[in-house]
Amino acid sequence: MKKDLDLVQRAKCGDVEAFASLYEEIYKDLYRFAVYTLKNPADAQDVVSDTVMDAFASIQKLRSKEAFKGWIFQILSNKCKKKLKEYTTRPAELSEELSGQISQQMCSKDVAEHVQIRMLFWELPQEERMIIAMHLFAGYTSKEIAKQLHMNENTVRSKESRALKRMKEKWK
Image 1 (spheres, one colour):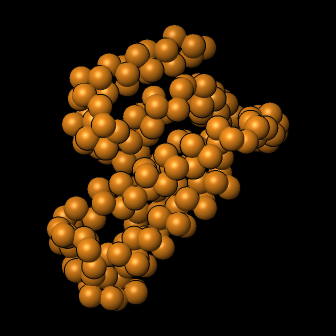
Image 2 (cartoon, rainbow, N blue to C red):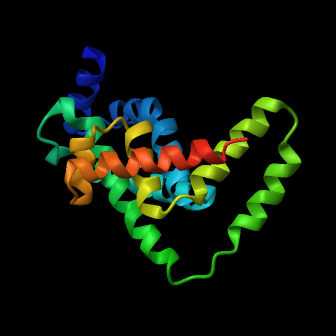
Image 3 (cartoon, helix red, strand yellow):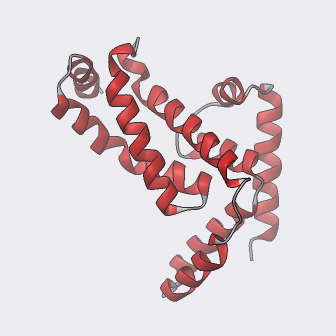
């Protein structure tokens, strides 16, 4: 943890290598959050790239070294919300394509279960996917999610609970 705080401090002072080290540590979590939220690996990569560029450009504005992870996930969350709004203006054509790719890759029971969980996740409404992704992949609390999504904390917990229950009911 102290190492991460030192890296954040060095990055705030313009150290590109320190920022790159921070990025290496958090990339998988950022990407997982984005892909589960957007349902599109290419868009997820783009959103994560934009997030990292924006974070690097404005890291001097980060007030607390301890807040780095939450800060960068807030940037990513905002970019995902913006991208989701763009989806409403274009036709949904990726699900069949992704289904075909996924079915070709199913080799074992573990992969099949992983794919089924993903599909169930993708069936959830956008808002519920965002809540679950923020909680599971970014580690936000209900209170933090409520603040970011401008909701009541109890509403966030209820929506997450109902979404997880629906996923569990559909699980084979």
